[in-house]
Length: 254
Ligand code: PGA
Image 1 (cartoon, protein in one colour):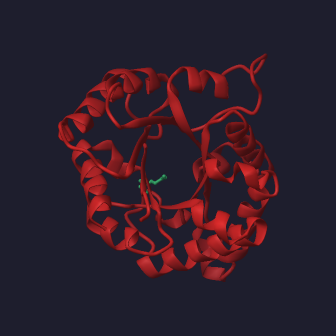
Image 2: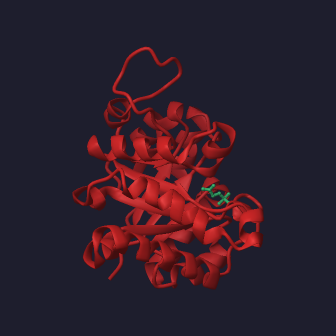
């Protein structure tokens, strides 16, 4: 049986005080109940300690939304893997489309970040996905192939256990428009085949591929039912304890 990863990306929302309340609301909804999926929330850097404290003694995990490639030094405004580990993070989102677009992160930089995260024994959630014009032109698979290949060619296959890929069609992020379950499955299968090409069938079956882009309680069931969809990366709907929790609950029944 698959173990889903239900990951929330709070983006630049939830200051420490709000983050603490939200994290406590989420754990409160699961008090005394267990689940088999892996539940992860990624607050802004400054709110990580508050969320880590709220999750203490619960199965919920905390992660970060970005990281630098160096250990320490003169990189004003940046955060390293060792700092994230010290703060209690287990996962780091890398190469989100908003970072690629607004902060000009290249495939090469995203690949180096992913390697740094995994080398330092954290898990990387590497985001890939095409923009609307690329889908309309029919080059979405080429774009995703380029993004996935850049990462896989930087990583040894022995590092594959700590790699998660998130397919997030950019046109579906924050727009309320979701890829159909068929579109998601088609791309997830394509990504699985790419991984297979690099590392073989057994390893490719173990790499989790998340779907992201307007995942909500009312579409999560269908998306998570697709054979190659191993979880979700959830933005807007993870900012409400009820809707995040509902998606987690749905993952338990798929
Ligand atoms: P969304 O964001 O769920 O709000 O579309 C997903 C993401 O950007 O990770």
